[in-house]
Every structure is written in structure tokens, then in C-alpha cells.
Amino acid sequence: MPKGYFGQYVTIGIFGLVGLALVVVTLQLARLVRPNVPSPEKYTTYESGIDPIGQGWVHTNVRYYIYALLFVIFDVEAIFLFPWAIVFERLGTQAFIEMIIFIGILALALLYAIRKKVLEWL
Image (tube, rainbow, N blue to C red; front, side):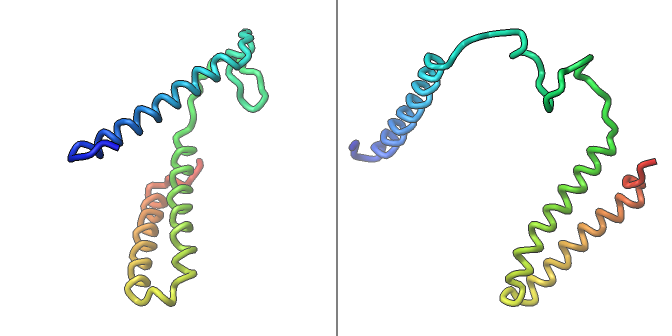
């Protein structure tokens, strides 16, 4: 074990090199052991068992992304609400006020989306 001021850095460097060597050796071993049978079918795009027809570039309506973003926002809200509700009594008034502010900000975001008519499909 190296001693002195730089001894700890040498130990970390050795640990990093051993880790890198393990990764490289494992990848090379996997390359030697794997079966290698190239065919044109392996290079095609696979999507849900359907053979690809035409180009891969498709124009997607922006509303799909907006719905997904809103879902993520409110899904994160639910993730925060459930644990908070479980320990609600132990947290006290300050945590209640903070959660009301958090829900209020998300409600404002929802009202903004409604006002901009983002949630209307047609």
C-alpha cells in the first residue's frame, strides 16, 4: 500500500486501471465467444414484429409530445404526493404549506395548458 500524501491517489489510480482492464478483457472475451453470423435481416430495423416498409422519417403531431410531457409532470406529482401523505402527521404544518404551494404551481401549469388550448385535440 503506497504511503504519503499521494499514496491515496495512487491507490485510486490503480483501482481505476484494474476496473478499466476488467471491462476491456470482458468485452474482448465476449467478442471471441459470441457467434458471428452476419445476414441482411439482422441489419433491418425491428419494431414490434412488423417489417419496416418505407422511410423511417414520419411527421408526428406535436400534441403527442405535449400529452407525454403533461403526463410526466403529473406523474411526478403523484410520486411526491403518496409518500408525503403517508407521513403527513409527522411532518407538521410547514410541510403541508409546502405541498400546497407545490400543488398550486402544478395547477397553474395545468391552467396555462388549458388556456393555450393545448389539451384540445381538434
